[in-house]
Amino acid sequence: MSRVLYQTRRKALFEQLPEGSIVILAGYQQKIRSKNIKYHFRQDNDFLYLTGFDEPDAVALLCSDKSQDSGFNYSLFCRPKDKTQEVSFGERAGVDGAITDFNADEAYDIAELETVLLSQLTTQKHIFIGDELGRFSSQVIGWMNHQRNTASFDTIKHHLSLTPLAKVLHPMRVIKSADEIAKIKAAVKASTDGHRAVMQACKPGGNEAELAATFNFTIAKYGATDVAYPNIVASGNNACCLHYQENCCTIEDGQILLIDAGAELDHYASDITRSYPVNGKFTTKQETIYQLVLSALDAAIAQVKPGASWNSLHETCMEVMAKGLLELGLLNGNIDEIMKNETYKRFTVHKTGHWLGMDVHDVGPYHDADGDWRKLEPGMVFTIEPGIYIPLSATDVPEGYRGMGIRIEDDILVTENGFENLSASVPRTITDIESIMSGQ
Image 1 (spheres, one colour):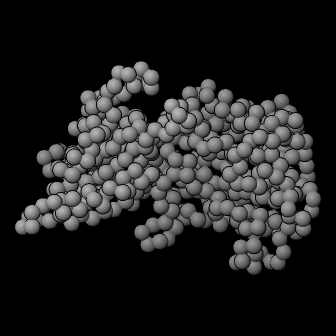
Image 2: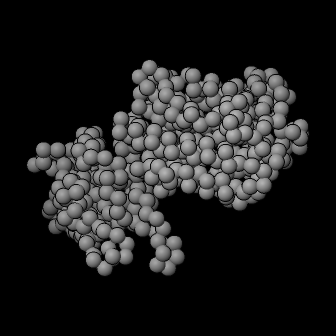
Image 3: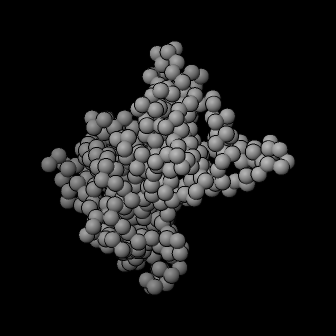
């Protein structure tokens, strides 16, 4: 993304802040896997969103400054250049690069953070802090009180307020720009081919780990060096664990495989789930549950348009699945009682969607300022993912349904006139699934 875009985002943020504000935004630090072996570094998304700076151990300060045309001064604190470290672990931007390449007004060695920060706090009234992992949680109160505690008795004292930056920044991230939508679409495209490859590779006697690797291999061809979340490749009863990650079991004839996997590309996520028979052919009972989940998904997607209520999508999924489960005899009573008492939750268990963006469960409120469910707007991207889960332990359910988890998840963009299903080309109908798995 261009430097202008990050400037625009910083300006849009600061326009929402009161006069006399300072933003302290902490980037992530490098994590050690073992001894001198480091985990692959992944920057905090709020930090990336406002700076584009993708190195560990960095901090950004945005400080009210009437002398700047923007109304604020942007300082970036980062690791200094170090030839020895750069030979081993890669080039650093350094202080000069933070200015020339990332458009900071000022840049400093990270070791100077506290000195510079305390000097800037003396003229401000409001602190907005973004520190996802609590990097400075033990220091921020001391920073707030420093001027008041060190100034002479007859000096004006500054009593600073402290507000989480997320309160202002996260609502900004809900509506995606055209550039962000393009990146999400690219991630979805990589995932689409990944899912298709897994469908074609799936067969009895294979292993969940093999299929997870097939997905990763395929998305790598698009430049996706990582997934948006650990792959869930769950066969049989494993699918009844919503965030199953072991991916270690042999897949067996007669089972349903649930795969929830999404590529991350240029720091933007995709999130797609498909469920299908390991042997490529649905049994009658598998087909019945699968079609029920797909009908719920399609009914919810059809409602997507600007002005629709966020929660109406979930309510639609629940109603469709509850009615179907009642007709199958898996729920008892009448539909009004079932909906009122939410007895359908025995088999549905989770909500049916979330925002999608830089985070797979992206940030931002689902309610408006009055506490009502948010209305959909163009530029929102989210998942819809109904599921029905019938574990082996449900011994009061006919045997052919047991040990089965079926979830179907698509990535949806709200457009000016309706929606675009970004993941629609991943086979999702029974006919299409059986066709691709048979090699047609």
